[in-house]
Length: 623
Image 1: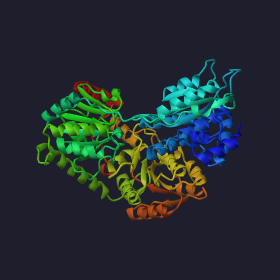
Image 2: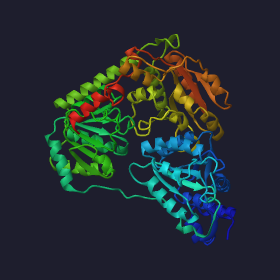
Image 3: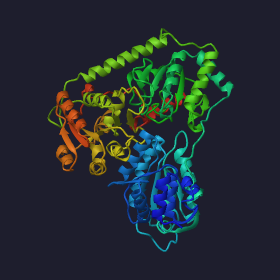
Image 4: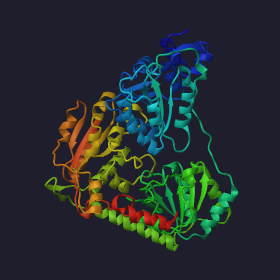
């Protein structure tokens, strides 16, 4: 039998368990702990990045990771907050496709990581969450467990967010890893997989553990729809329609070329979801940009006027389709989705399930054979949507040209958010950086402003809308060289949710810039309160914070004041981007009633005292 160090060294030499066993250097059957089997099994699936906070509920797992990291097989990233760890792991999966693991102790640490897992669940990103758990002998309450006389309470709780499995006895590790591989690796919409490791099970020895029983990654074949009757039915409906809109979500990634081709054949408008910018280039004339409750003038026009809607790769999130009220004139939906529940969300739907790119190619082929040809852009519908896109561009330019406005909180003139965000977006794009938006007003303005030509230029969490995600996401650059330079667009409130990431980022070598757009408000909520009730309440403060001094108190962080003009802000960003490590730019921005201070709202939303009206409209439409 080999020692743990022997196994790690042999595995480092051969690169895989199977190769090491087949070489004869590594015995197929070994006496190993559950913790080591877990690390080996995850390595077998390509999971080699671990991020989190160790505690008394994860010391045995930490010891295994220590030995395997010493041989270069895994990378372990200790941070100061479990929610930040979950956000960084989510961003790593989103930007690179690599599956990482979040590791915490039992109790409060696990709960904080669990809260952060909402972002991966909302964005369909499969990552492992490995938490310590109470002992299986149930000798009495374990410190930090849920204090009730009932079994499996953490398992019950975590199962609501994703898929969960408890290592209730040593050899359950094989099933746990198999299920984890499927859940984190499946096509379409995934989410977190919670693997609970009771403290007494982690060091338990699996005698004669069959190393070749540890499952590898799950590779799901491409799913397609080959039913000609379905495509013919969709084609017949399209032939009769006069105003077609294609609405896309994150599930349309990789299908941009097919979407543009389909739009030309059907003389259709294309409308993005808030998190799906760049799938279709911004410069594409048929791209009406973002639609929804915080959508654009052109995007919402195309949604409201369409008599046929083609949904590609999206869930009907409340803000995506204005809580079901965006499709005011359509009576039929053609829905491309991997999930039949989402494909069949609306009434009067032709559901085409499977991979979006493959199925779009099949429908395009069917349309072409049926006599459809590319439109010349001279129809009344084409003229109308092109005109709306021009109006939207003029609307944006008016805001970009707005001079600094007098702000009552700052008691002086400061930049507006549209101006500041536009400047920062342009500079980030020139640097080929990825832009990540935190929740709130910065996010709502941001996804209307970005002009992405390619996928993965922007990550905007519009499902969970999680404050603190963007600043935490900068840490992903420390976890992988495949993550490009990252720019976090954060409000002052979002930044303060996870400011400790500056310490973690310096410790592990993160590269990126955090821009703090400081309006001393929860401006998105203040605006909502005033729009609904005429008054804002408890959504601001009067505390002056010197974020530059705060950031520079962390050795290795370079911080800059963004100033009060575009020239000063540009100079600050240039200095920040030139820094090799982590930088912070603090810029005051306007919050007030001037309509040029924001990008406006063109859609409805089922919230507050609007609910009765919006729900009535939803049921009137009847989709």
